[in-house]
Amino acid sequence: MSDGKQEKVIVIDFGGQYNQLIARRVRECHVYSEVYPNTIPMDEIRAMNPKGIIFTGGPNSAYLPESPSITKEVFELGIPILGICYGAQVIAHLLGGKVDTAPTSEYGRTEVKVDQSSALFKNVGEGDDGDTIVWMSHTDYIAEAPEGFRVTASSSVCPVAGMEDVSRRFYATQFHPEVNHTVEGQKVIENFVYDVCGCKGDWKMSSFAEDTIREMKSRIGDGKVLCALSGGVDSSVAAVLLSRAVGKQLTCVFVDHGLLRKNEGDEVEAVFGPDGPYDLNFVRVNAADRFYEKLSGVSEPEKKRKIIGEEFIRVFEEEAKKIGAVDYLVQGTIYPDVIESGLGESATIKSHHNVGGLPDHVDFKEIVEPLRLLFKDEVRAVGRELGIPEYLVSRQPFPGPGLGIRIIGEVSEEKVRIVQDADYIYREEIAKAIDRWREGKIDGSGDISDRKDKNPIWLPDQYFAAITNMRSVGVMGDGRTYDYAIALRAVNTSDFMTADATHIPWEILDIVTNRIVNEVKGVNRVLYDCTSKPPGTIELE
Ligand code: XMP
Image (cartoon, rainbow, N blue to C red):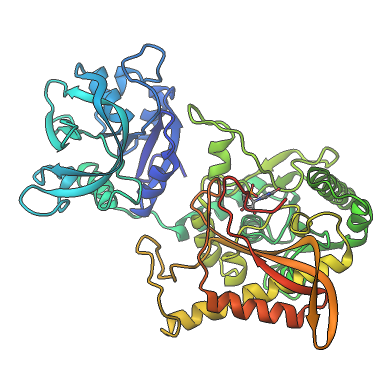
């Protein structure tokens, strides 16, 4: 993918929170983009021959010697550069301008005036003054633009909210065009990518799939490949890519730990098993009893997580042993995992892992990670391109420990059955409600304009039922009941690090509640979790 022939705009990371988002916005222009640390050697950049370079924001002060910077050689490459926020200040500082603490910091939505004669701001801004709303987040500012630059945007307190040196093709914005709150941000990115860098925008998911399949074929040859298939989006798409590349040389092991959503095991088998469309070796291991036994009597959440993770690896290893030595182990790693596990300045530790990690006792030579350069929505797009059924491709996140962490306290078969049935009803009713909303039958809900496909404003990014460890008294018919309470969770979030409880319309919750108490034996009460994250987490354990 980085053969130098394909159009590419690279993002240089200075520790900003939005570094991935910038690459993603560029990819939305159908131009391939990757994030690199600010220490990247210039020869490496030359070898990649990018059409443009974007400097990210970051939390430091560009004028302090210990702050992340970049060699001035980058300005000699003859490649267009766009600096964003801290990235803009780095340009100003290195090229002889003045960066200082701003007399007034700016945070949040801010009105700026842009000069529409700048290529960066073509068709951006309204009225003669080019007014537009942008997202600011800075305490330092460019007090003086470097020689050769002209100011192209300003706010009431920020004299240099944009600057450019057209002859050298260097551009900068103090604001963040990559975030949705910058109303015309995508236009700014497009102007840079197409007009300044001269990209054509011919990068497509179909070319990614074809290229990857070809690349895997030549890399793997007649080697044997093993994949732990969870039925989640990433491992499913990775498995299909590999099956297209090497067919029966691939074995997929699917461990059903008895903590999957209702019908999930059969759905995965229908797609990947012998009756499905893919020509691979599929091994389904029904290990529910083993997991239930290990979990019996355990109620402490971290212990449960550990037991499930470890047992998963043990089962996988046992199956792998039956297959014998393999050459490649497939991992469904995606780009955010790559960046989060330590790219450069913005490295953070990932708090959640999918079940397990790497098994110790599987005999393999190399790991293949066909999705390591893709964002989640791009993985879904590849999945659709490969013809994977929509219900698998558009699946919401499901934690590795599965329902084990949606059953508060001790896990039992009865509780698994209850939570599966309640969750199934919840998902079914949300799906029906979306259809009703599309037919205009649910009132009072607009759409969110920054969502790609039109969806109701109340559509959660993740939603599920959990079974609480509480039983309470109720009445059914003429009799007293003493049954479990189900908690319904629904959140809106863009990064799953923070989240708000979704305002699902009462009429939908009403239907879900009625169905659960009537159809799921053992439940007499349904509660809605209104907690945001923080202080709550999305999962209940
Ligand atoms: P929390 O509960 O920490 O969850 O707010 C944030 C997101 O991570 C998912 N999650 C997990 N995913 N393995 C995973 O692969 C895990 O152990 C795990 N725990 C939580 C959760 O569903 C939510 O999307």
